[in-house]
Amino acid sequence: MRGGDDADLRASAQEAAASTVRTVPSVDLQRYGGMWYEIANYPMVFQRNCVGDTTAHYMPRKDGSIEVLNRCRNKKGGIDEADGQASVVPGSGNAKLEISFFWPFKGDYWIIGLDPDYRWAVVGSPTRKYLWILSRTPSLPEGELKKALDAARAQGYDLKALRYTAQSKAKE
Image (cartoon, rainbow, N blue to C red; front, side, top):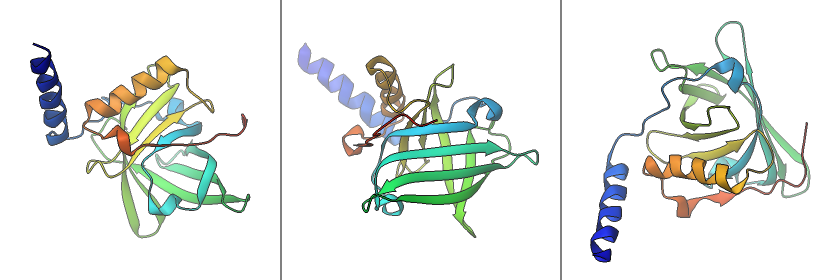
């Protein structure tokens, strides 16, 4: 019967991969605002010079937009920064954002997993091309990391492609 169990797991993974990516029902942007540490990501060209200490700071604005500041330690030991602006996709419960670092280009930023206490978040895109695991702290306890990874896996993301981010010290 074990073979049947494995087949069921493969079928579930294939169904998840074929299904549409879903966001969490809603996000309180004031609670979501603040500093997040990158725990893991899918390697991507615009982070090619980042070697660790990657953070994202989200600052909700009165006009409903969100100011974004991404930072990372680069290969030369310096800090790279990218300033961006995000806007909420109407009707998404604040779980779908469009983010732009280089006008006029925008990218999808979908919150697909979120701890009830906003300790971790899983962010992806509807194409499954992008994935980030974020935490309020530079590391996540194993049980919390498993919950975040399970949220990504349930959406059909291939976790073998994840690259874990080195966080050298706690930042305030």
